[in-house]
Length: 378
Ligand SMILES: Cc1cc2nc3c(=O)[nH]c(=O)nc-3n(C[C@H](O)[C@H](O)[C@H](O)COP(=O)(O)OP(=O)(O)OC[C@H]3O[C@@H](n4cnc5c(N)ncnc54)[C@H](O)[C@@H]3O)c2cc1C
Image 1 (cartoon, rainbow, N blue to C red):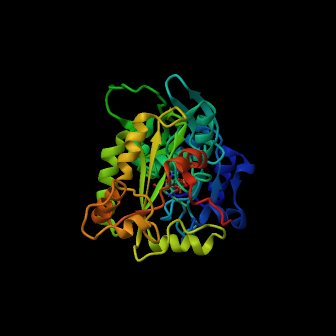
Image 2 (image 1 turned 60 degrees about the vertical axis):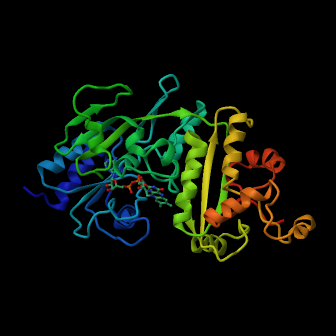
Image 3 (image 1 turned 30 degrees about the vertical axis):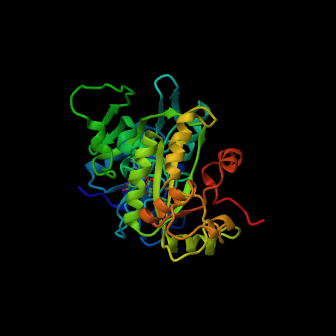
């Protein structure tokens, strides 16, 4: 039997308390409008449960009375999945109050948190214990681990660590009939029956509401380096990726292809950002971030890896060639320093802002992966 709005409100207020049941349409706005303000919906109520039991009560009642529920995390997904339609009959169930980090286990390398813990808070809690939770996306200050799991979020470090599907060990959830699924286990070798947790990953709330999760942690890297390379086209970027993977193996954390127009947008909207590479006819940039192990120093292995990568990521071309090079008759083979540049330009049409060893050693490690984006105009 379908319930009317008054009955729904009474029931929701009974379950979560009047203070956590938002009825006023003005106060509902952030919950019924999507991140890009493209999708606008209406809801009979926005409920903010504080415990798994309250989630279960709400879901069971709504299932019995055929009231639609829209689970919502940080509402940062860009396709409108977290906002209701405009019928005004749905209940938005926000997980924002369930935001406690329950435990960080530095021995088992796991973090257990409620679904409403923001990604930023999860990463910070892990970092306090010298651990890395590797998911990193632009919305990390607002999106929640429940939403990350429901959308199987990927992020920048997916090359090395995988997406949320690869980072989850256990899940607690409330299924569509209001039953509580208790799968909060941090066991890595769990061969007992079906892998139910994976059904919830990427299902966007269609199978149930995630209330908590156990996630994998990794050692916190002590240093990282980033290079920004201009490539002629996406094919060249793929060739560069192959080279980078072959050279850096597991150290390569991220590899992103950025279009020239995207860089132009950043330059246009963020004052003080210096154009990372001279404007050329090349339309694409590619950044790759090899992470260096735990020690904050340049190991021989890292140097080997970097110098191999440097045969692809070449030193900047001087504006006018040095006199010694100008005098060299054309067609003769160049010095050792010329060879890598020629090779990479032939292969990738690449140019880059890689600096001298001394500069990298003294400056790049300290500046971290934001270099050279954070460099201000002098
Ligand atoms: C600037 C920016 C950068 C982004 N970069 C990336 C990126 O690199 N990679 C990427 O994958 N995404 C990216 N996103 C998209 C978005 O941030 C992710 O999809 C994120 O995982 C959504 O989390 P959320 O908590 O905001 O979920 P919401 O937007 O609130 O919800 C997303 C979906 O999951 C459901 N849901 C939410 N919480 C739960 C729950 N506890 N249980 C069950 N279902 C639930 C909702 O009903 C909805 O269908 C980006 C978004 C922005 C704004």
